Length: 142
Image (cartoon, rainbow, N blue to C red; front, side, top):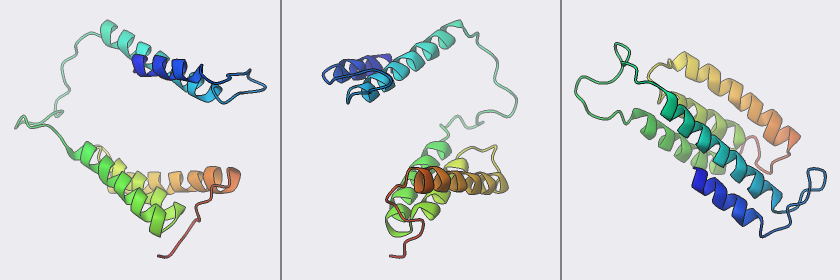
């Protein structure tokens, strides 16, 4: 993450960065690269300083196979967002990606995933459709 962030900063310097009040085209990639590099450094520091703790009872699997549920749910959520965003609109696409991805966590119930999806769909409508006026309709049939 640190190397990718530093690469984004370096790539952003090819453009005019500007100032906070007059941002140039290189400001966003440089700022995002800086945040990515900082996040990577903080992850590395926390990983080095943390002690090893015993896993909580009930965590993990008795059969020793990797748990693919989270990754599969996230990929299915993204595919559902792509399909529903094209054929259904912003509201069903946002609901689907959050609901399906939330089911990837074994600690979430269907009720929690549903409530989270409703809340995130409402936030998406306010932020992306109303405030930013994203050119994706709320509902689309076909």
